[in-house]
Image (cartoon, rainbow, N blue to C red; front, side):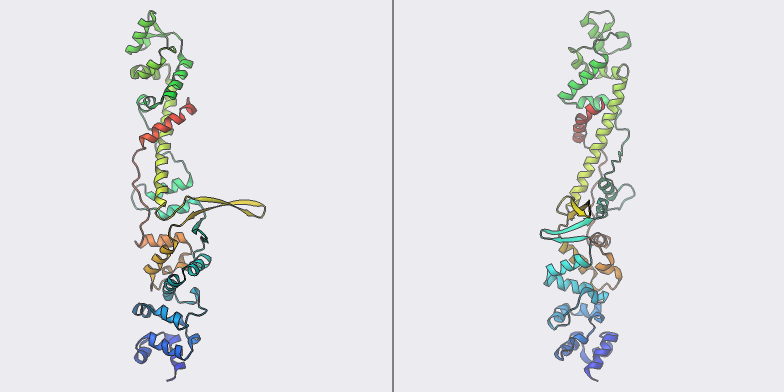
Length: 367
């Protein structure tokens, strides 16, 4: 039987039992083909997973002997594609990765400073977060953060505005609160019979007025420092202030919780990305459009992780072109356990330092 017949059989059936009885290994057969300079007659897409698995350096051999000349990724059978990428990236990473960005994972741009993921929208990044759990998950929180949806998860944040708001005021805001009190009830006659706190009883004695007292510039600071007296006023002549302080705390608390979640999400992104989200303006005709990008920390390693995990898979989803995007590829790596999706413990409560800061920043917006 002549070589042409063997080549025709190989192209139709691969390196099967018939050929193995003659050549033992696929490399031996291909070596004969190369010596006869008939490489262009071979369909390398029929080389099987077992052939690659049995001969770890087979792609090096194919390149050396000229079988890969003028061959591209899409010329190969699904089984061979990942072996080809592994060989290509190891030997010509810049060329291989540019081809991948231009033709396979088309949401990635290769730039002089690295590889940047083009985001359809920011919520796409939520796919990098863990979604396991019966209740709220890291992915749920990430969706809120990236959509900039201020979701106000808590609606009843305090039952004591004195201890949770007034006691947390800094000096400037305590002075501001004093001015508010004076504006609304200052220098007015108030009847001690309406109040039982010792503070008011003592005021009547100091002011030497029978059953009557006034809140003045001289005593408003002491009033604010007296929890019992302030609570009586908040339940009486300053009931509107009490409602406003509830609103201050609710907004401050929810913002603090959201800020903490924001920090957790963006710190989590550092695992796979090395920049913040960047918005770039581009002129499209007469319009200026904005596109969001984020720099991938190690694109080459991520691609190689996928390639090595899926070599010889033989299924459509074993190849990069099935996913078509970096986000899709990473999702596959998360699903098969090669990589871990970003996860964090979702806080049960807002951080007190954040709440206190927000209260002092927001007080003037509410009262």
